[in-house]
Length: 338
Image (cartoon, rainbow, N blue to C red):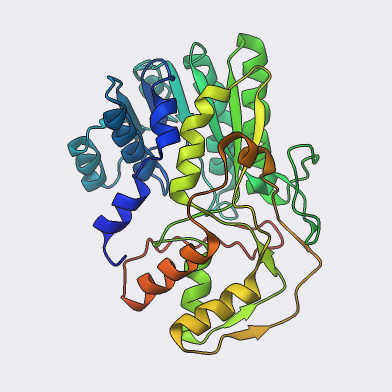
């Protein structure tokens, strides 16, 4: 895989299970925050699944669309795009209704310099959205950052692990969850809170960052020695199919791959594929931000794209000079500062 077209085709290729489930989801689907890292591929996946199912259903994507090319591309692929600033209440109230809502809006990077905007996006806006779309069912994107660091040998935090967020970003993510939970109870809104940790494609993510450091001969800090990853296409499938599993009170769902991944071993595999020796500093700490997604795997099956395939695809992308989004994940951050 060496081109954007090949990548987008793979990301938007629906499974038979998704095609089957899309026919069970009644009504149109609204994506709030569609122009972020995951939204465009999620919208394309939805359109393609609807087409393969042979049904009529509208996919509506809402964003500020600071990049007009993205808006044009999505419209050309069958997404009805609405340009709006979700923090503008008049614009929010003018949005079209849909029976199903996937909430992707949020802010992470730049939080340390502008925490108030992060809190407005992540904890204030959910209340306004809940008021506006109280008649919709919702899948709400959240983050594994709401959990505390757990022992690396534990298998990761489960949905029953009490939240203990570190720093403004993680705290605001828990605030988002709490506000949605409040309005779910108040208006009996069926919801699912989708705690992701971490999605990747070739253009961004933990694996890209590790692979680039190996290629460039940069030392990899092993203090955060373990992580979770999942292919973005698999994560998007879970988000869509989760519309059939909303409830009141909201169901909590961890979404990631099945492995507790050793960063050193991943770097060594990149080194093998790139014919270079990775450099390391420091020793792994015993605790890390890790999620256990066994509930998701029981509900939807294991991800279709394996860890090894993700590493190999990423190495090929790096070696061929594939474009990147220049949006670092800061997955090695241990003090909650983003």
